[in-house]
Image (cartoon, rainbow, N blue to C red):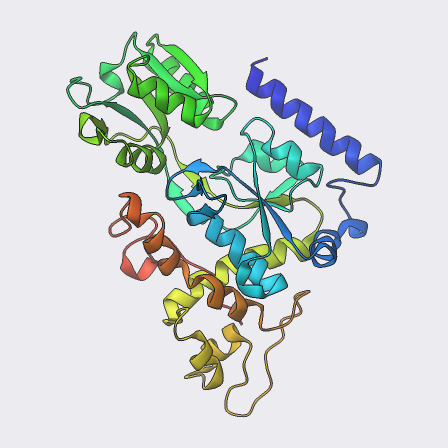
Length: 352
């Protein structure tokens, strides 16, 4: 059994033990609403993030956090607690223990560039929310290396983050090719440092992660990311299993931000549109009456204005993308992360 599978087995055992003892992830009706109640009682959302990924989740020198994932944490906090999404405790979680920390309720939601997989869905006592970002695994190499794809990588040393799907994808892909390689493991920053100093010939990870991190290097033009993708990596928030109320809140905050972009609702115009909605769809989204009618209440465990608060705090999906991921060189146009109407696959169920 590989180290990764041992890790998954241990986390699954923790989840089962917690359920048997009536705590932790639990399951069934007793757990429903538990996370939301805890967040409300605490007055703070505990959001598990990476903290070392420019554009997605970065711990700034002043102690603040910024990035794509961070904005979704703030949107959820604003939806539940108000206060412009400021009531968030960002918890930097290592890849090896992120699921255990969620299962043992040390964090309320995990938004940490985490890939949705069948194994994670079935065996960890967790559920995933809507996909927030579509990416795939690729490789960074030196610009003068002559490496264009994995066909040129037999026998090289590759930096890869330990205890992740990235590590397994790399092994699967090179086994299929019949190639040898030497893995050099570590966390993201360790891999970046090893790659930048020449201790590995290539560095593998989510393509968006590689592009954003290389763009921050002072000698960024000495490196490049190959076009080849060897996997699909849909990223989503994760929550504990068995708490339907909390999963609904997290999921519909994400859906709401996508729907808002489709409807033209932004952080700047949300308040004005709530006061005078142009149509029923916008009124429902913002928790406002339309033409003297009733405010739509779909029965979530929060009031009907929760999406309005999220939008006022962070803006819609497109606004979040532009001020975070786009700024570190990861384009949206022409990618899967564009809205369906713009040629991508990003789509949300209607809020009705």
